Image 1 (cartoon, rainbow, N blue to C red):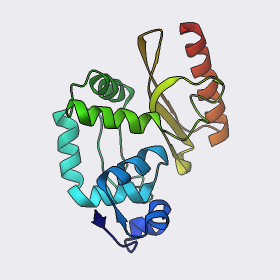
Image 2 (cartoon, rainbow, N blue to C red; image 1 turned 60 degrees about the vertical axis):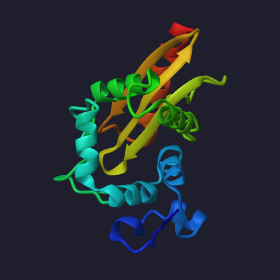
Image 3 (cartoon, rainbow, N blue to C red; image 1 turned 90 degrees about the vertical axis):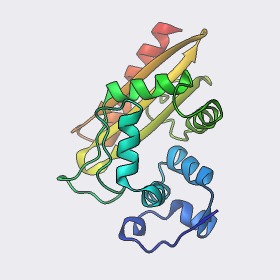
Length: 190
């Protein structure tokens, strides 16, 4: 168990996991909250634990060429933004499903967490049946950015998707568009 305090500037605005577990959490709990709730505090604790350089070197090691962690979550600085690309997300999810990164057991844990993603307001917005999907949503309000990347499996085939919508009129407009696009893709493949 890690012990932490909600005292860092990066933690002040986001107290999700902090309020629920009262200053103690396992790495698995932090990873789970980070993914299924987009919990910035959990993410920032994990960043503090290993540091920016560790993650950026790991991203390069597993073949993510466009992904760069430059700042904590919730601390917005247009001169120091975090980056990724659809190409990197495709590579990451493909490697994860083929169990070519980490090890078999860690890939199963990662898939289990991604499958529990609680946000259904983007890619799955207009999908009313349960589907086998592994994904991560995100948003940056100050850029009106919404994203949802991952994969779904249907009829024993895996399909990868990545939506990054920026400078939309509103988050709601972006959410609706992602939902409509995903539904169109999903229905054409099932």
